[in-house]
Image 1 (cartoon, rainbow, N blue to C red):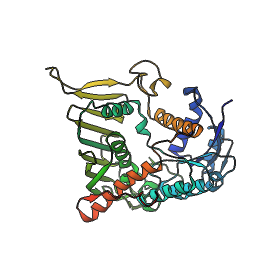
Image 2: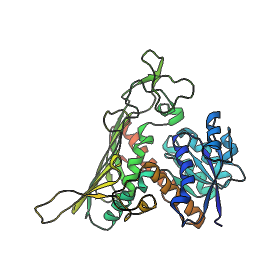
Image 3: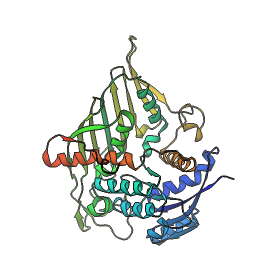
Image 4: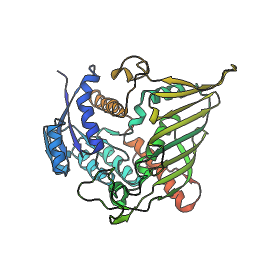
Length: 392
């Protein structure tokens, strides 16, 4: 009989549902695990979601007040999947109650919230994890191994981007993601954070940045009822102001000496979920795009006249892939990455291993975000300051 890890999920929106499904899927995909996940309590302010949590996802109970779930005595680990500006109070309450905390990025809507979350976790000694799920793509893990093994030589340049259409429709509703008091910053918190986390995972720390931001669609229709993330209004609906940025771009320098260029947008038309990187070195390069999650492009410098990129297809020869599908070039998807991530986090709780990325790595992303925000005002290069220094 494996020891149980009793789970609370705070918020049953998109990511709350994804994590709840992953807890149910883990036993079937990872039979050699050291633990059994148990969905104990879900908190959500919407009555229908509370019903769904119990009837469809198998939670033992559902409550309206997230504080009740975050501090429940029969809970070991808390998943924070609510709007960004609720992350910090939820993390603070769960950590104070001695719970392990897994939070969706960016663990708060502003860089200072990420720092405060790390302070709380450090003071209480609880284990932490952050939802940078794209890092767990088997081909991303393979790319990291290639880079670390010297296959690309010295890294000279990195290009990261996350271009998404989720806000491209001007009639898209003015939901929580567009308000500073609910989401904090816009794309720099929501999707550029994924690109920066990916870059630091693959090639190391960023030391200096300069960049810009823009709000492309300044007003949106007001929602009614419990309108979701992708809801659409009508041309004659009343509108409200968008309070955070739709677009951000950044140039940077890495500690290892390479240069970088990043861009993120939620209003472009065409790329639907283009979380992508290009890594260039003296001996070769790599290209990966989440829209083609099961393909990695690899260029190696050779003397052959038949040069060009080779496509490496995903398959069971790469980490975790075989837990979902056997053979080669048989595809896995987004929620498989969430399941991998959640399994590794829960396994770390069961075995006492350190999980990464945790809150410390989330603060490293927030450090870059803060320098970028500072550069918007100064229109000049900014040094990435160590915001963890006072916590050590």
